[in-house]
Image (cartoon, rainbow, N blue to C red):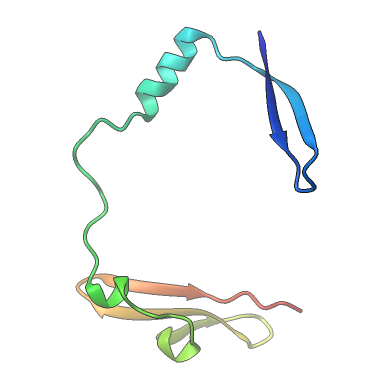
Length: 94
């Protein structure tokens, strides 16, 4: 069974396409899998210094721990203690 999905392209023109419709049983199974009914989390609280931090400048990224093959810096680590770290990955445009 197919459903028609419509949306607009960046230029504003309407685009429609047929997509498979999930059966009711399969849809229910997916909803049960992805419902996340548990009340626990694996994400702990982070220090305010990280949550409110400004990491837009290289001097705020911490120490350089890896450089690219051409010697340009590519990975920084800033350690906030207590197992809290922020890693900044740098990708250079040529």
